[in-house]
Length: 291
Image (tube, rainbow, N blue to C red; front, side):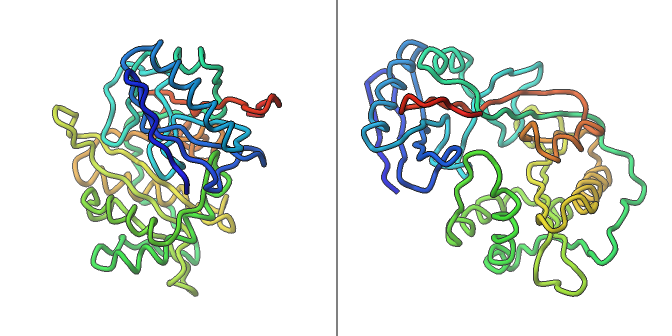
């Protein structure tokens, strides 16, 4: 995957191209790991970066995006009335204006919502499905089992690029220190227990000075063949029930794509909008930029 560190002195960032990233079938480049001293400096850097991506054959520029959605991506479009939670996106307030001045517009929008943990006495199981904890003693094996599920569940997400097995294994290992027993669950079928059909990952918001009673529900993935059959709701209910048993009273449903099933489900649970985000894009070939 070609990449380039571009530093103008007052702003810098990294560019990626020819790594499988596409936008509505058009070759796209990513702009990420961005830092800028001011709105004007960042706008100038974005223009230079887009010129370079155009010369590399990209038709679309997407950002902020550290290569793909497996890295850090999105900017804060509305910071709301609460501080960032652990693993939240946090970008300078002048970024939206800087990107807009460089010709970028929102191509995908995301929301984090918050509310009381659902009081579910007994989460409703799905016939033929069993929930088990993530096996921290066999992370390589768990990575091998979960990788196809996560790839399939998120393959339709904006700017998704499949991650090689080694990259997914490293990603799971990086999250392992945050895993609390019962807050990372795997759903499997009774007839094929070796093939996960769902996964949920949540963790306490353990930032300094954060509320000790807040659970962050970060990842919820369901195999496409099992979508709409209650697996996602069961996983969410089960992990929130475990959070309540650990003394947590509030939950953040984190970084949900606005048109996703998880966003619609959250609308009936965690109803207070905490923060809004956007992935931005700009056309580089003169063609309209579909959102």
